[in-house]
Amino acid sequence: MIHKIRKSFSAKVIIWVLLIAVPVFLLSIGVLFHQSRKLIRAEAVERASVVLGTAMHRINRYLITAETATHTYAWLAEQSMQPDSLKTYAERVVMLNPFVDGCAISTEPGILSQYPERFMAYTLKDSDSIKTIVDTNVNYFNRKWYRLPRLQQKPCWVVYYDETNSLNLADDGMMATYSKPLYNSDQRFLGVISTEFSLLHLSKIMAEVKPYPHSYYVMIDEQGRYVGHPDSTRLFNKTIFAVADPQKQADIIALGYEMTKGRHGNMSVMVNGQRSLVCYMPVPETTWSLAIVCPDSDILMGYNRLTYIVIPLIIIGLLLIIINCYKAVTVSINPLHLLMAKTKAIADGNMLVDIQHTQRTDVIGVLQNSFATMLESLNYYIDSVRKASDQNKRYNQELEHTTQLVIESEKQKTAFIQNVTHQIRTPLNIVMGFAQVLSSPTDDASLSEELSKEELKNIAGTMNHNTKQLVRMVLMLFDSSETGQAESGSLEMADVDIADAMKEALDYTYNLYPDIKIDYHFNLPDGFTVRTHRRSVVYSVQELLHNSIKYSDKQDISLTVEQTGEKLRFTVQDTGCGIDTAELDNMFKFFAKVDGFSEGLGLGLPLTMRHAQNLGGNFRLDTTYQEGCRFIFEIPLA
Image 1 (cartoon, rainbow, N blue to C red):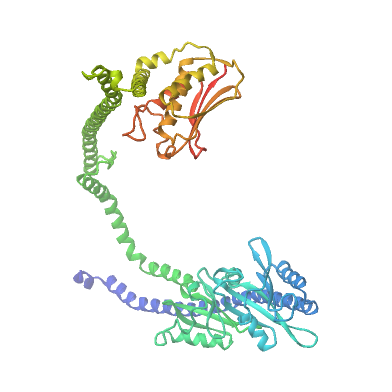
Image 2: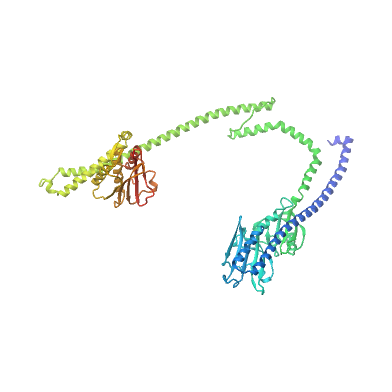
């Protein structure tokens, strides 16, 4: 290459021209960029100063509005120091000035006879409404907004941080207050009227006008404390001097001194690691200073863009060949890269990759089509294996479910047999035991001589009671069977005398439990009949009474029969422990018992529910009754 250049005169000329032109061109571009940078910064200073002045005029307008309103109503308050008048003046200040967030009129002790210790009427804005409140409990005498105008004996602006946010005017209690002392004609100090607005409100006013997208406003007081800053953690908690490192951020400290002295100007400082232009000026009639911070990244955005354009233009000639070669190779090799990425994904187990067929007829096209066909075949066989696996999994799940049902059925059958055996064996043993006693008297005396009439009567009653229990359980098992269910579905209806049916149910109950007292209320006319199935009604009432006797305290059991609209209602009520809420869902299930060790088969309530449904009525537990249980059994009148 060097040998060819030495032999070519044109190559040598081009090299010498480039050696002269390139430095001159680069130097010209450098001078142009330097001058452009200076002009852009000068324009930025002017632009930021204009915007800062505009924001200052807006803030000043709001401050003047607050001052004017304060002075106006201060004169009225001095003329009429009455609680209702002061309350009205505070309300008018807020109502007639949309920029004001609150107004408070506070008095010295002994000024108002009605409130000798202290009195403060304050009005505040709450969303779209205005609230006026009288407070005699807040100790405001040492508050900055009250103390300063009293000591200075003149109006002043006060910025303070109300940690308790007692007036609820702004987030975090950040307030700006114009306070004016009140005096009567004898120059006696009466109190202070203060007009307040939120510093967050002030920040929103300042943020409405910005010269650059990322510029922001900062406001500090005479001590350098931040009273306005986008970072709310700095407000009132830190000063501009405290957040600056004296060794590395001396420019920020110098800026703080300039602003606290109430001077006007601009500086270039490092803010948060970024060079920024800061323009500042004092806020009229206050001790505050307002500054606008404009990052150089915003100011020099166009300048930086120009750099990005000029540099590519310088080297574009050299890049054209590189770019064209790169594009040509990329277009040719790109399909191979795509195939490699997809085959790698397939090798990693991702079979969802899609390789499209192509119309290219070169080697790369044939290779791509071959891979596409191979992937289709793999997907077909994998889908077949997946379907077979899913089907086997489904069969296994169904088999497992069936096995669980069989096991559960076997458990239920065993439990049912054990329960039925236990429930039948108990009364049967009693009957057989007494039968053996009666059939086996002693040799020396007859049975009548060994046992008294009362004992024979008790034995006979016990045998009769347990025999009826056996009959009851057998009938219940029959009714719960498929045969009993089929018979209950085709009941023969007849006219039933309700009073006679209830007598039968009560007689049966008294026969089983002669010592139980049942409070019976029959609220129907004599001879009242309903076309229904007598056995189902009598059985249902018997079961409800039996259930109440069995599970209550046996003290207050009642049966009420009455007509409610188009239905006949039977209500059985008792007192006692009642039914736990957790057992309500299982209460009407067959063979379900609240206590597994209690007597019974768990069929009484489910069979009563079935009878009510077969008769076209309903059966329910009144959950509003809390003293025990109240069951309601209803059947239609026709």
